[in-house]
Length: 142
Ligand SMILES: [Zn+2]
Ligand SMILES: [Zn+2]
View 1 (cartoon, rainbow, N blue to C red):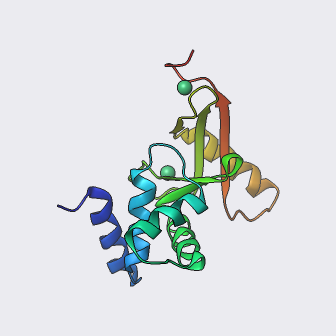
View 2 (tube, rainbow, N blue to C red):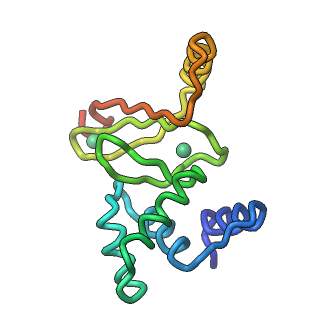
């Protein structure tokens, strides 16, 4: 049985004519299996359990690929990656990070997106990517 995410990845690669290599797929699965944001070296370590002696650039290129494709997001302050929980391909990422248990919750505040777009338009600044991280305490920890 293929997971929803895997089906989505296959569809995405077929439509956009990207090669869905084994390391690419494995890296995506590793990130999605992780309950907490996972760091690049941890991804590489996990990948090593599935394929023999994976080269670091192989893992890093796969991470970059999924990041660019918005399947995963980089959480800057943690220097770690988390799988996108949203069906739509959005341009920015918004996370609430619990300082108690370390859980991260992807959130979608549509208003923020609009505000950012408007401000950028006024300042004729071209956006490449953005991310918002809100630190606090989750409902379980408060
Ligand atoms: Zn997302
Ligand atoms: Zn918590």
